Length: 326
Image 1 (cartoon, rainbow, N blue to C red):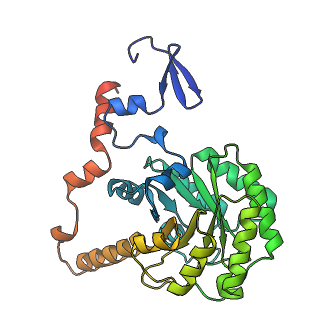
Image 2: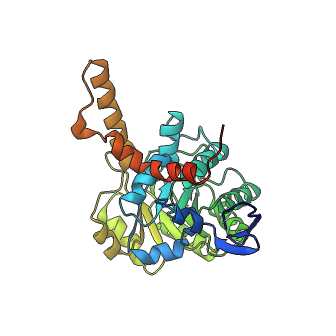
Image 3: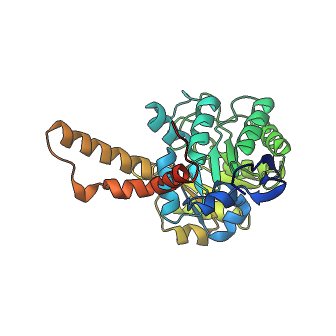
């Protein structure tokens, strides 16, 4: 199949065709021992069935996505706070938009076979922008996205002084997002940030409206107490339901995942857990280096382990299998 005279006939419906014969896009990658096979991501609803609640650490770059998969998670998320901070060095206050996020998602998707949910902010405009955003991320290979009802300029959902758009405007965005997808398996999650500015009852009413508009699930941002979480869980029990836990500074209390599940939540997002740990590690290493101290081997990987993480062996096998004389 790979010998002299073999002919690549293209890709159709996710299958690769060589010499008139088809193979799944990931089969030849498996043959060479690649750790992750990019053509085998499961649909989001299937991911929800793998564990409850579905734990969603945010990957801020391709390496963190690879590490999340190696740790055994069933899915991954790309969030605005982490991408803005790690990729651009700025806070999550509406300084970056679709183009910057799309570039990050493209890079991160290439490093993992996990199904991915993308933070699509407020959809970046009106219904046509929401449509463009959904089609772009679905075409890229994401399994899900969420769009929120914050009023521009938006900011991190755990910050104060948020404002929300009129409910009818968000309903139109949800309708546009659902209509834009080419496959019903692409999961559209509607997030409301109304709890802070308008109160719990408003947030619940908005969530109900977004579900009626066609959203596959509801994401209530910023509950501050167990009582609020329990109330939200009672109303939306049986519906795909998400919230986020921004550790070391956010509004929502950290609880064991099982407790969230008992309350009715099916997705728990962790926007900063890995980012904050990485930031601290880099600061410590930089301070040691500046002070003339060597890398602490107890707190760092070595060359062998890092090469294994980034699949060096796979790329070496590619070189050997397809030698090209310079």
